[in-house]
Length: 219
Ligand SMILES: [Zn+2]
Image (tube, rainbow, N blue to C red):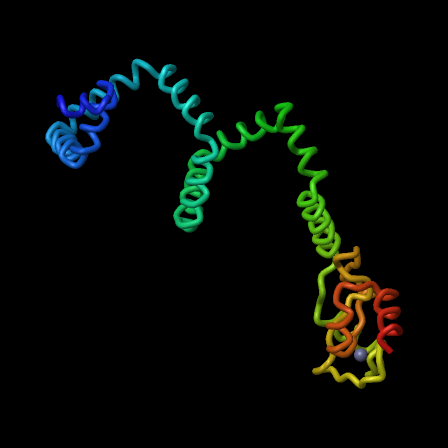
């Protein structure tokens, strides 16, 4: 001990050093003590928690605020590595607390922060992308593609691709949305037509005008 003090350590530093040097022994002792007195300890902790709920909550809140970034990071990593379990847990929890959750969501949705955040999200790139996708989904859901429609879309073509001179047959044609779904086209028969596969893949997400102009440039 005197040697350490000669080195100019404070008492605190000395204790810290001592702990670090004997860490393994200390932890083993702790574990042993815990295993020996497990039930007693759990009871004591429960008693303390019951008496000091507010204090503990405050402490937890403080700790969370202080270590928010690292906690969120850890959680993200954990959920990535335990995707299935997490999903199942979530599902089970939702099933168990369905009505509570609904009420909570309702209340939470009326908070001012929530309204501001929703507005922000809607104006964000991601929000707009998703809402456009949903619009497209809703529109296309109105009409579904039936085998009969596919047949009639082929019959419109008289066996020749409308975009190029290639011949198409009932087994080799592909179905084209004249106005692409991503640009507001529906599954209505007016918007469907058969064409050859290469034209369809080249047309992709382009509108009819864009596609025709593109083809002129290429030709
Ligand atoms: Zn074609």
